Length: 370
Image (cartoon, rainbow, N blue to C red; front, side, top):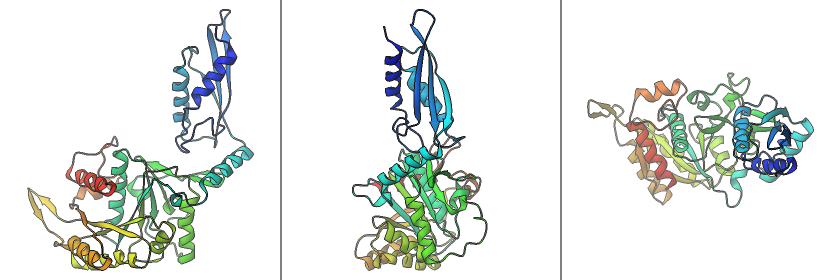
């Protein structure tokens, strides 16, 4: 007959497979399970009253329901328990949380994306000027990666004109774990933006050193885990943030967004030429708002050829192939759905939509990873 001690040890072992959704670690490794009590019911000792004691990293953790459900599933899979466990929820003491955060930061060792052997592909989305849909491209590309099954992260590096919180419908702040931030997750994408913090509605008048420090904090003080893809929405032009990204993430690949008209494509070339001064490769060019599909006819509202011009000029200047990756259509739905807080490539339940825009972004995402 199985005794209480054996059941408690076996249940604790099973809980080792329950993963904290924010930190991506086992709840036992994180010290969140502080005890398992199995008390026999009745005289036969065949059924047990089971209590699992849990300490969350912060009081009122928004993912406590998810953690509780996962613990219940793990316990129900054990044949000798017979009962849904009683889960007693508490919070870690400040001292215990401090030790955990210190341990996690030590393991990460500053910028996690520069570690040898990192699996993360990093794409910095750039443009020569504003108004070409760079942020919309970033948001929809990130949502596409996530819908395709990639662990996806995004940094809103456009400090002055941050857009990602609005495009993803984010109205909450990142959880602060004793100085380490948890990125906000929306539509399957982990993200961080200065727009998520108090006072972000005011004009930001930062210069070079402070901009660089903000990027360093976004990289090193946020718990990203090990994403497959990291996207950065850069500010337009070739200013301080683009240089800071190149210095902090030399393995990043630049994706240049332009529209068809010469006024946009000419300055887009300059945003790609930053690769001549910094250790960053230009992965390719995205032409946005290429055409409007009207009753089967493609209307070139903003002219044509801008993306190809940028591709050819960067290929010649940089000495390697910089392809035109895709030509995205102009569709009012992208703006309307995006302003409502959902990337236009997704359905309301988070799957890729069956639309030409979603198909174009799917091909773009697969091409970048390929």
